[in-house]
Length: 144
Length: 65
View 1: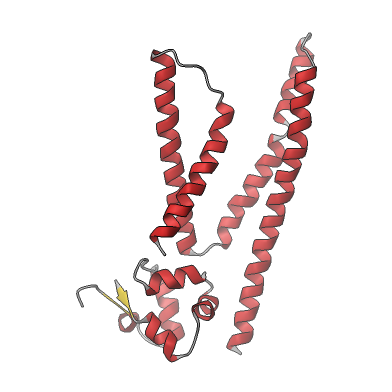
View 2 (view 1 turned 30 degrees about the vertical axis):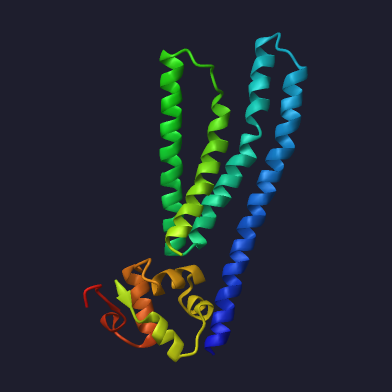
């Protein structure tokens, strides 16, 4: 009886995880599909009128819709994690946030007072993801 | 905090994966608890105690004990 219950629990958890992973992959795929044509479109078009400028803003921000849905799927997947895994992710987020704060604040100060080259904010998210990944690896090592 | 989880599990001939399945947690969590790297929450401690039909004090005890 216990083996049957165990099997049902395992299958339910695996199904939930697969569902979240599939949703995340679909939305990130759609984001990539929308992002690169948008970049190319922006490179070949020029703005002459105010309405064209508004349309350009809309095209630039459009890939953020699937990205938002992918992030929502990621946040929902945290519900299916157990308490230790949640703690690992919490520590990883704290690590990522601390690194990003230190890095952006330091560079902001340099930019403001030492005349450093301006860096686009677009690099903040990839950096946050990289630091989060490193944070997960470090936290996992702590609990091994 | 120390615990007798590994001994209790071995007595029942369960693997870490089996115990993780019964408690609906990951195998990594069971491993971390057994090695004393992670102290479970009170709800999880109660769940463990219920599964082994023991009290929490019979499974978990302070480091100095």
